Every structure is written in C-alpha cells, then in structure tokens.
Image 1: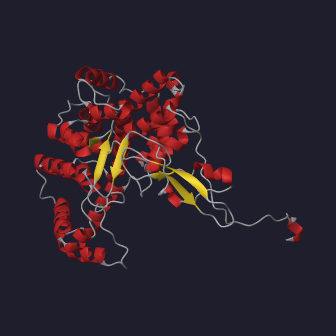
Image 2 (image 1 turned 120 degrees about the horizontal axis):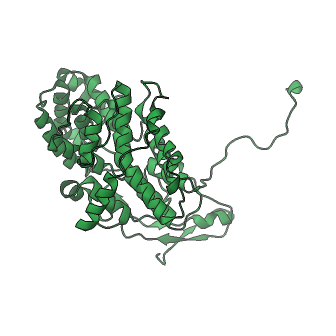
Image 3 (image 1 turned 90 degrees about the horizontal axis):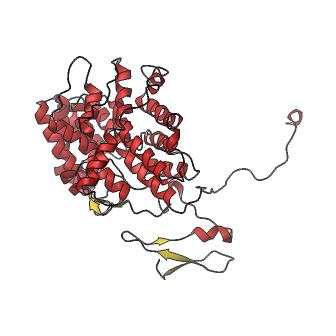
Length: 428
C-alpha cells in the first residue's frame, strides 16, 4: 500500500481522504471501500473503473498489447508450453517440474469420464437446443453427482473439484455436439493428450479408430490455451460473485458459462463466421469495407480490434500461425470463405483507416476460421471457449475462497418514485 492519499471533496462535507493502492503492475487504485461509512458510494456502470478484487493470476495492459499469466507472456506460453501446463501455472502460480507436470496430467486424464447417469440428462433437451444451454444445465448438475468435493472450506475438496471440472469439460462439450447430430457419445481415450482426446470425442465413432493430425491437435490445444484466462471479464466476475455467496464450484462455473453465452462476451468468433457468410463473395468485399468505414452504417467488421487491447491482441500472432498450418494440412486454403477472410486480413493490415484506428485482426478472427475449417458448427464455438476458460474461472474462484472475501453487494443510483401511499384499486 502506498502512503499516498487521494482527497475527495463533496459539497457540504469535510474532505475525505482515501488510500491509494499500488500493485506490482498497472495503474494505482483509489480505495473507496470506506465511503459507505460516510453515507456515500461510487457510481460506475459496468464496473469498468472499479477494481473488484486483488489478484495474482493474470495481468493485461491493453495499450501495450500485453497479457501475462502469473508473469509469463502469453505468446511464450502459446509457442513453448501447452494447455495443461498452463492450467497448472494458473492454478498453482508456478510452472511445474517434470514430475509435477506428469502427475497433474495423469490426474486430469483419469478424471475425464463422467457419471453414466449424466448421459440421460442430454435426452431431456431438444435435439436443436443450443449447446450452451445444455452446458449450463449439465455443468450445474455435476454438484448432484460429486458430493465428495462440495465443502469449499476444505482445500482437498477444492482441488478435486478443480481437477474434475478441467477434465470433464471436454467430455461434456463433445457430448453436446454428438447429441445434436444424433451420433453415439464417444468415451474418452486415456492414451491421448487433452486436445487430441477432445477431437476424438467430437469426431470419432465406434466404427473405427480416431486418427488426429498432430497439427490439428496442436491448433486446438492453442485455442484452449489462448482462452484460458483473461483477468476480470464478465464471466470471471460472474464466477467470483457467485462464489462469494459460498456456492459450490460447479454452480459457480455454470454461472460463468451463462455469462460467457452472451454475444457481447463469448460470441465473437461465431460473429466472425456470420460476417464472412454475410459478405458471401470476394467481389463484395470492397462494398463491405466501405460500409465498415461509414460511421452511419450499422455494419461492423467482426474479429478486428478489441475492447481491451488498444494496440494489438498478443494472442492473434500465435493463432494466425496455427490458422495457416491447419488450412495447409486440410488443403482448403482456396475455400471461398477462407479466401474472403484472407483478403479482409490483408486489407486490415495495409489500409490506412484500419491501421490508424488499430483495427488489427484479433484472436477471435483466427480461432473462428480454424474451428470452421475443422468442421465444428458455429453454435459450438462458445462451448469450446468455455472449455478453455474453465481453468481461469477455477483459478479465480479458488484464489477468492482461499483468502479473505465477503459476499458481493454492488450498490445502485436509485431514480425511481419516492415514497407514496397505497391507493385501493377502486379509487385509482
């Protein structure tokens, strides 16, 4: 804590001194928690200027295009690490030794199966139900099956719940897809790594063995890794707020899934594909570019620029490499939809309008193209996002539960009617 004080001057009151807090990185923060005792509180719609917690997990500097997990740059992790090692880092704060890594991956691998009765839950949904609707239900239902890890005051219970959630999310996600197309559920294969196993459960059948190209498995692993955590976004904040009430971890993650489902949060890569379909043909690109530049036209290029990153998305470069690799392996570089995407990318990187406004392709632009290339339907994109983000949600939940916390209780600026007397219905 800094010795610096901020002074708040409110008409009719003595000046109020507020502590200024300093983190290891990032701007200083004015501690306004004492204002309630003074009969005041702050007004901050969307909490965009409010530090809701103290955290040691992830740091973002949007102006620099910097994303750090426990101090490690995201591009280094994506290029040199893998998803499960990054999971360990987010959960425990340090990169694992080889023995720790092998033990961790072994535990995750052996928790991938789900209770057999969960299969019947899927039959309660319509075949055309959105996969995120199903995920909200089945993840929340895990608390009905795993009673032995619901005591949030028990460190061991929290650890087991974390292992189960990270391990079972790909299984539940793949089951959503299989249910929607009427194919049998595929059990996990413990001989495969995390991403490879997910693709096996998505696209495998009982009729033949799954053969997953290493480049495709690596691209899926990167998609999971690059979405593993993103600081105090809407879904992570939803997990923390739900957890602050003492709710069990499965309910908290279900709350995160519900928040992620919103199109303003987790639907960006799905919106990229919708945009490409709307453009339809390369000959229409110039027309849509002009529409994007017209401030009076509601059309927007999706997958370009980012709310947090004001310079460039540090995840995009690595995702672009995987995108090139996947399209080459599948031999579909000349697919009409991907040709549109490549032309848009070229324009965004060279056109002065996009350069000036820093509307560079972001991670959602490339991940959307990869998922489409793999044959994954767009309504599954956010489910895959949720699968990767699960570890971030758990890490933040565990960090909060492990320290001092209180139930979240935002305040409001009330602008409704003042007190008035009830009037009986025959006198109105």
